[in-house]
Image 1 (tube, rainbow, N blue to C red):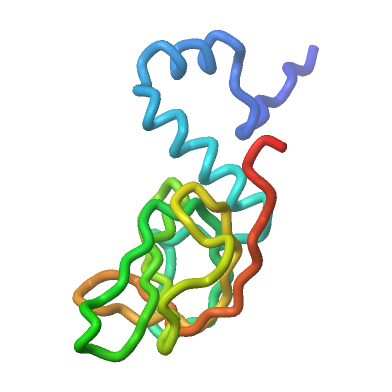
Image 2 (tube, one colour; image 1 turned 180 degrees about the horizontal axis):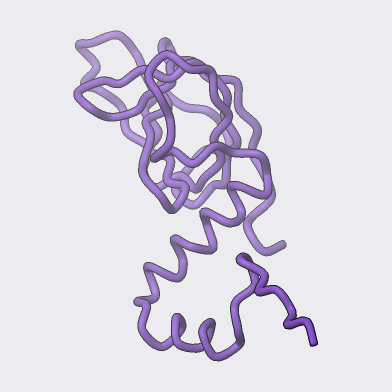
Length: 132
């Protein structure tokens, strides 16, 4: 009698329950965020390579502005559950609708600034909140 082949992507209910009992809330949230970002066509930020054009999805964790003495720029820390990335809009001090908690999809050429993946002046789309 043939034995059924195990499906690599399907985990038993007991294994999923074990994950829920052993993972922290932040680890579970990161896993959900990575899953949502991937479903929406985002490349995991931890997998980005220098100078590649990429689409990323994630949640805005912080919005910062450099001091007024420098060139106006809006810097957004975008987190997809795997790693953070900076989105930088030069010449901007704000963008309506972008604030901590906003879910974004952004596209542009990746460069690494002091080891941090960064996209300057990305095309972007504000997406509905996760889970809705």
